[in-house]
Amino acid sequence: MPIAFDPDARLWICFPDDRDKPNRVEFAVKPFTMRTAQRWRERMRELAEDKRPDDQIRADVLAELGKVIVGWRNAGDAADIEDILTDAEFYQLAWAIVDWASVAESDLKKSALPLRSAGAASAETAPAEPAATSPAS
Image (tube, rainbow, N blue to C red):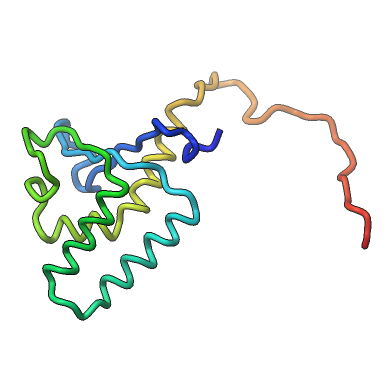
């Protein structure tokens, strides 16, 4: 099943510089489909070019993050994302969240795969079959 169809699926992301830290702050995000990732990037570009006052843009970015971030861990008793991040981190997270979620999804899928023994073939051999073609219209 595609991960985006699982209503309980969560990807844990963190800032790349923090990946090796044992108690890093991590954010739980909903998986992005290709379309939602495209829409997210378009929306962030729109907000980056927006000419409104900063507090209004910040409120819109915060609202967008609220749609995809469903929690966090290792952030003490912080009840709000604004109690966790600096301004620079806030915008960095908003801009990079799709890419970081892709990395987290890849890591999640890799960790779920069974380990191969050192001498095992990298792929199973399948019998060759002729390719199916659709009738010409």
